[in-house]
Amino acid sequence: MDNKNNYDWSQQSVFVEKTTAGVAKKFFANVFLWMFVALSLSSFAAYYMSSTPEMMTYLINQETGKMGMLGWVAMLSPLGLVLLMSAGLNRLSFGALVGVFILYSVLTGVSLSFILLAYTSGSVLSCFIGAAGIFGIMAVMGYTTNVDLSKFGPILMIGVVGLVIASVINMFIQSANFSLFMAFIGIAIFTALTAYDVQKLKRIGAGLEESGAQMQDADTKKLAIMGALSLYLDFLNIFIYLLRIFGDRR
Image (cartoon, rainbow, N blue to C red; front, side, top):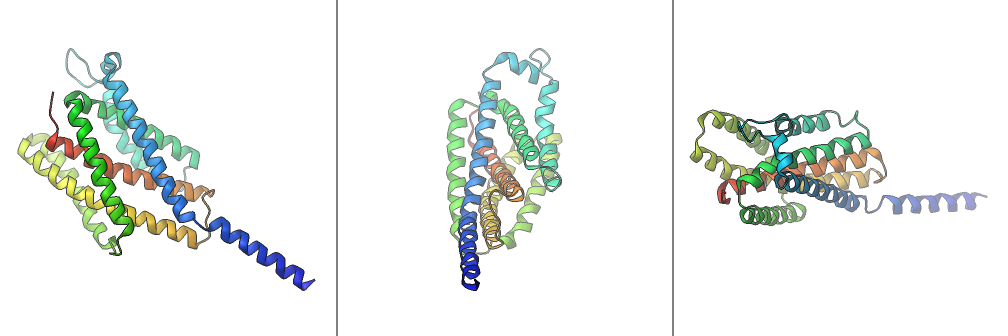
């Protein structure tokens, strides 16, 4: 009887080990899958809005040149949605978090439609490819390096806050040279943030695996969404700053 009980327990242990093994890799794959979904939705929304004159009238009044209601929503709401996802991570269900994430991706794409109208399609494509290359290189570096990048996190966050403050100031100054200078700084900051975020997500995945978490757990899936949001923002900012430097205006 004792042997039977010991056998059942060992079989259960093997089952638990198999179900938790590889959680780190699955978590990492889910992060990039959700990031790809967000980029696809944003790209489609940007292309659809910019190529449909009837829809653009909701963004901006062609006669007065003033921003329409949808334009203000598309410009301001993404920041609010990011704050909602960050602050309400523990309160929102996984389904609600996915809904907010998708809405954020679409509205960000709508706001990006202005970029497609301001820059030539060739420069948009080349900067997108350039951003993908930079992002890919730094993602691999962040995943494979043995250097602890966590110590750079606070410095990079200060840099992001500085960029936001400088951008607000430049809205009043309207200095092209200052904007160009910030673009170079922005690329440097978000390039470094890509490696930092990837390493952080790798450690989160390893921690989930060590704790016996499974990808079916709601908290684990929500962490994957938030990880995708971080990488999406890194890529998007690299792309936008590249456009400011190398983009050809229409």
